[in-house]
Image 1 (cartoon, helix red, strand yellow):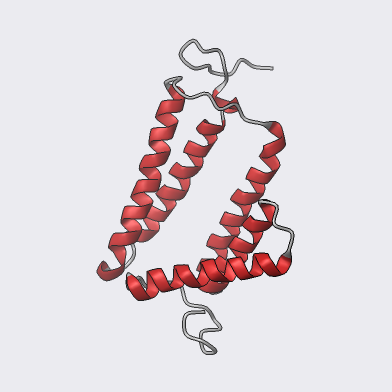
Image 2 (cartoon, helix red, strand yellow):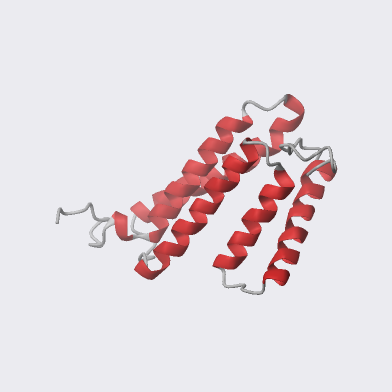
Length: 161
């Protein structure tokens, strides 16, 4: 097995540190979101730019702290499956948002999946919590902050779906 780069004499591999991977994921998601936000109109651009910029900066900060050897968060092999599924759910959420499923439906499905991964096995309870989160997010972004959210092909039934 090849020798992996180690941190400042600590002797652990960058690939074995959870913070390293979390930093990379935050940088990736923040970078893609930042790129997407640059295409928004001037009235909808500021909030997504701030949030995506903060995600990217958080990822860079975590990665820098990890590489400097200040943090020690060994990656637990048994948790890698759940982390992979969560990243997959977020990727599916992005695909759903951009393919016409809309914000509320996509966010509901994402929250339902994340709650299932977190151990919530009571489907009705998970669905109620997911619906509450999706509606609260919609009201916050669309009504309070006046951010245009992706529309659904079902918006003829109810505006905002």
